[in-house]
Structure formats: C-alpha cells, structure tokens
Length: 93
Image 1 (cartoon, rainbow, N blue to C red):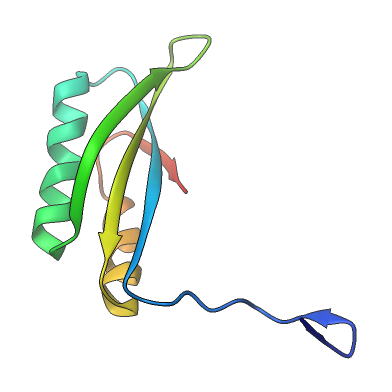
Image 2: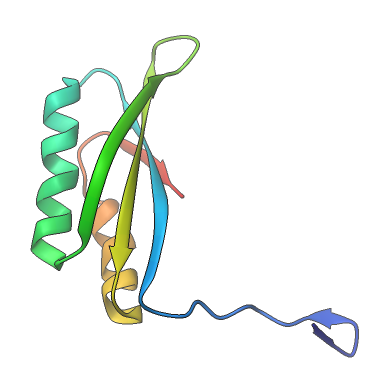
C-alpha cells in the first residue's frame, strides 16, 4: 500500500518467527560463535532452534541460519542491538 505514491512501511506483527542469518568472521571457532549467539538468545528470552551454517566461498566468513521466535518489538530491537556485540559479527539479517 502507498500514500501519495510513497510506499507505506510494513509493520511486523508480534510474536514473529523467522530465520535469522548472522555472518561472522571465520577466524573464531564455529562452536564459540554458536555459543555466543545462544547466550544472547537466552539473555533476551528469544526461543531458537535448528542452527545451520555455511562457509563463504573464500572461507573468510561463516553464515549461521537459526530459526527464532521473538515475542515483542522491545525484544526484537534489543536483539539487533545485542547482535552488534557478538564477537566477529559482520552483519545480521
């Protein structure tokens, strides 16, 4: 939907479940990166399951995909602030 030709921002309806993708420097052990992500999820009360990972073509980065469930907007915002402090993180979608 748009207003005066400008697209209207879509609102996320909570609770929401989706696959979070985190790109992390591969210089850290894989298990340590998973532990760091799990620790953040537990701290914020974000339910998670089914981690999977894929190495980048040059081996410099590893992407982790994990199904999560976020209960409210405050937790969602805290999650993305918290992801910035995960060691080696490059970005998260």
